[in-house]
Amino acid sequence: MQEHCGNLTGSPRPRRLTGSVRRAILPGGGGRARVHGRERLLKFWARRGRGHTMNTLSRRTFLRTSGTVVGATLLPSVVFSGRARAAGNELIPRKMPFPPNDEFGSYEPTITPDGNTIYFARFAGSGDKRVLGTTTDIFVTRRIRQTGEWPGTGADWTPPERLPDTVNSDSIDQEPRITPDGKTLYFMSRRSGNADIWVTHKQPNGEWTKAQSVGPNVNSQYTDHCFMPLGLPGEDDTSVFLSIRPREAGATPTADLYTTRMEKGVWQPATRYESKLLDSIGLKCRLNGFSRDGLVLGVVSVHDFGKFHTMLFVHYDPASKQWKGPIVEAPFNNPAIDGACPMFTAGGDKMIWSAGYDRGPGPVSTSGGTGSTYDLFWLNTSDIVAYYKAKAGLS
Image 1 (tube, one colour):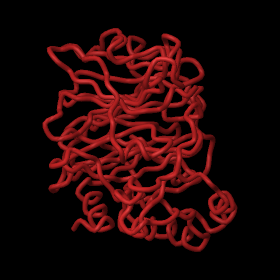
Image 2 (cartoon, one colour; image 1 turned 180 degrees about the vertical axis):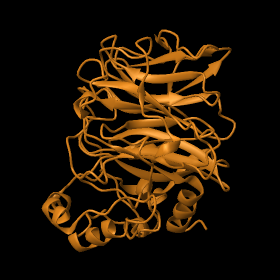
Image 3 (cartoon, helix red, strand yellow; image 1 turned 45 degrees about the vertical axis):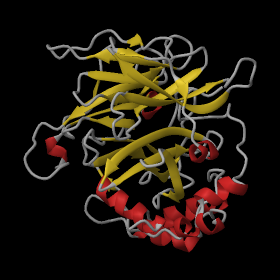
């Protein structure tokens, strides 16, 4: 059974959208998402060499790997609208400088409200000998020169540092999430045997307390991971996470979203987060929500049977209190390269994530704590919202 975003092989294959569900979220009936053709992908990569955007793959490198891209069947088992399928290149990820990027890479970052501190996981397989054991540890990088436009240059950031052993262990430690005050760090760890949510607190002297499980109201005997802010208006104390547990006693464990609310310093018993739209998206491993420019946008990270991660955009309707479509695929998704599991600043102005766009196809991240080398990318969320509105016909 899978522990985290790396590999959800324990999840049953989702059914295709049919009937009223399909009509409700896909105006016009939609159509199957198609893997990009070779020439279209060549243009896709060739346009990414400007400023802090992605570096350009050489034609030789592209042609060597494009057989994997074109022949892949790694897209999520959902049906996209025609408008989403025809997405162009208006939304181009921006690459962070070097550092915080380096030769060892990063995975599943989280960022403080001011954008000046980034926590992320790092795979031992990347070659960084500071990672304890053979899986993943959590690292941090800080922007120490804060003049000029964010994110600045490599001279503005510290080289990544491993968090102390009060936080990390010799087991899998990843999926960090820093709270808006910068004093509490949640993450997923397997140190207790199962994949569970753990927490550590930053003291006035800057040291972190010994990490502890968040407790049985959230964690179960099954897999629990990707503990994120729900991101809905008025729900600042609510978190959402993914758990592979039975919906009822005696049932087969399924991968579902759950929510829990903080009351008087205690996380309350988790309940399944029911959404017709979100339940229809198979192979999801994370939900992030944020409000910007009059829209509540949801980013659903998905994968196909433990292979490469991609992102889908949906939106939330406060009036009906329902997540709605159309489902719009991120235009920078590449079915042969990992790129998902984002986080947002508390104010919702920036999205940050890790991806292997410039490094080409590599080892798939797995439940065993192994993976490839990824770089940090970012976008202004206003640009994401504008893109979604245009593709969804909401502008």
